[in-house]
Each structure stands twice: as structure tokens, then as C-alpha cells.
Image (cartoon, rainbow, N blue to C red):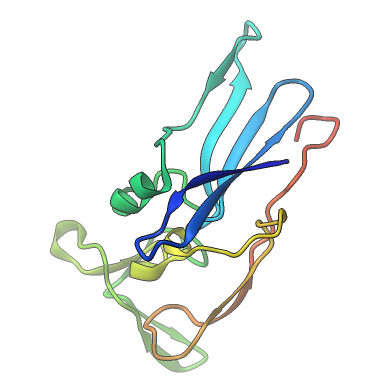
Length: 157
């Protein structure tokens, strides 16, 4: 795995890009900004390598286009929660809303501070992290572990 500079957050915090490769040529690059898949190169039917995801060149570009979720690992809930409300164990919860298809407010992909907007500290193993969501943030609370692979196996998986 290699680590390179990928830009900075609005507050100046460094964003890194981590790339893993398989001997077959398959290569994936993921940033510690929300575990965003930035690049995935795979062979086509003729064996020629090609990019299969939309690639933006710097972390700042992903921050600027955050509402589009390019390559995002969205977190606890992928899709919309209508009205930003749900009930669990007879308790009602109100989340922030960040989307309104057809004029109906919804909590989409973790809301305004979903995983795709969070910078995770790294020590060359950035893809296993625990995220605590404290009470009062209008997000789905609790601790999440987000394990993602940091090496490829012989089968290319």
C-alpha cells in the first residue's frame, strides 16, 4: 500500500490517498476523507486496464461536490429517511435533512455530516475506524466500525 498527499480540508487538515494493487494490475485508491473510492482500475475483456469510477483530482474537488457522493462510503444508512424522522424501540428520532426530492425533506446518506465529509486519522491502516456520533448532532448516534480491505489477495478480491 502506498500513501500520497491528496489535498486538504477547509481547515487545512491534510487528506491522504492510499493505493493498493494486485499483481494482476487491478488497483484501487481510497482517501481518508470518508473512505472515498477515488480510483479503481481493472482490465477490460481484452486485458487493457481502464478506470471505472469518476475521478476528481484533489480532495478539495470532493468537498466542493459533496452533494453528489462521488465514490462515497455513505455510512450507516444509504438512501433517504423521509422527513428525517424514524422510531426505534418506541423512541422517536429527528435527524437533519439535506435532500428534498419532490419537495419532501429527507435525511440522505448520513445527512450533512455523513461519513463522506469526515476525515479519519491514518497510520497506514486508514480503513478500519471507529466513529462516535454523540447525542444532539441530529445524526444516527452510536459507534460504527468501518472495516475496508487494505491489501488484495491472490484471487484479486
